[in-house]
Image (cartoon, rainbow, N blue to C red):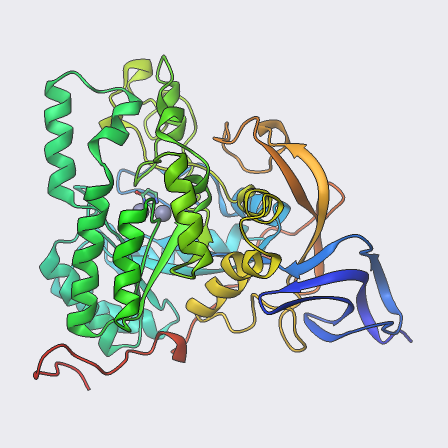
Length: 480
Ligand code: DUC
Ligand code: ZN
Ligand code: ZN
C-alpha cells in the first residue's frame, strides 16, 4: 500500500522562510511529510524544474458581490474561484456587503448561500459595514463570533462611506470583540469637490479619474485612520496603497510600534494613469480606486514591499464587464463620465504571474518574499492558520509553478467571467501548471476540474497576530 495519497516529487519547495529541494507527501487533505526520496504515493506528480509553493491567499477580492441597486459584480463564485485556482490561488477572502435597506445579518446569510453554491476553493469573508447605526453595532459581535473577523470600512463613496465618528464606533466594536479592520482610505470631501469642479470644467473622461484623486487624497486619509487606530489601540490594515506618500504614513506608524499594516495590489505595481488615456471610453477598463499612478510610484511601492512596510499584495479583483448596460463600465455609452464608471479591475488569475514576473524574474524580490506577500502574510494577518505554508499538518494547498515558461496575458486564455483583462498583451514569465486544494488536484496542464461548491467557508476565530498592544496615547484607557 502506498504511504501517501499524493507525492509531488523532485521539485524546489519555496516557502516564506526558505527554498530547498524536496518531495512533498500528502495524505488526505493535509501535508504529511517533506523530504528527499519519499515513499511512493498512490498518485505522483513530477515536479522536476518546478517550484512547489503554497497556494496563493488572495485576501482582497470582490466575487459575486451584490450591490444595493440589485446588480452583482461580473464573476460568480464559480468563475471567480476558477480564475483564482487557474492562477495558483487556493484561498480567497471576499466581502459580505451591507445594504442600507437590509439587516446586515440577512445580507451576510444571503452571501453565504452564493458562496456555498459555487466556490471551488476555500473562502472567508470581510464584512463591509456602511452604516454605523445602533442596529449594526449590536449585530456585529454575533457575526464576528461566527467567524467574520474583519470589518471593512470605506472612507469614501456616497453610498458606502462611514464618517469619522462611525469609524471610531466600529473600531470600538472591533476592539471589544477581537476583530480586525480593513480600510479604504481616501478623503471623501476632497474627491467630491474635485469631481464637481472637474465636471464643471468639462473634464469627464476616464483619464480625469486619476486627476480627481491625487496621492494627497490617499495620504491624508491614511494619516487620519492611523491616528484613530492609535487612539483606540485597534489594529488595522490599509487597503490598496498606491503611492509612496501613503506608504510613508504606514511606515511612520509602524516605527512607533503601531499595529498598522499595508496592502498594495498588482495593478498599482503595473498600471499607470496613461492606461486610462484612451479614446471612446475605452480608458474605463482601467478605472479603479485609488487611481493608478506612474512608473516611479511602482518602484516606490516595490521598495516599501522590500522593507516589509507593505507586506501583502492582493488582486482587489473587482470586475465589471466592458459594456454599456447598468453596472458595466460604460453605463451611459462611450461618453460616460468617469464619475459614473464602476471602480475596479479583474485580476484574480493574473496576480501571481504578474508578481512573480515583475518581482522575482525582474530581480526586485526573492522567492521567499514572493511567497510571503502572496500567501504566508495574508494567511497570517487574517488568521488562516492552515494556509500559506508548506509544512507537515498544513492544508495541502499547493501551486506547482513553471518558472521558465514565457507567455503573454490574453483575455482568451483566462478563466474569469469578465469580458476583458486590463493586462492584455503583457509579457510574463512563470505560470502555475498545477493547483492543489486540500489534496485535490483542481488545475493541471490546462484543465480545470473542480466541483462547484467544494470550497469551504473558513471561519476565523480570535488569533494573536492582531491582538491589540494594550497601549493608549493618554491616561484614559477605554478598553481593558
Ligand atoms: N475599492 C476596493 O477595495 N475595491 C473596488 C473598488 C474600490 O474602490
Ligand atoms: Zn477600496
Ligand atoms: Zn476592493
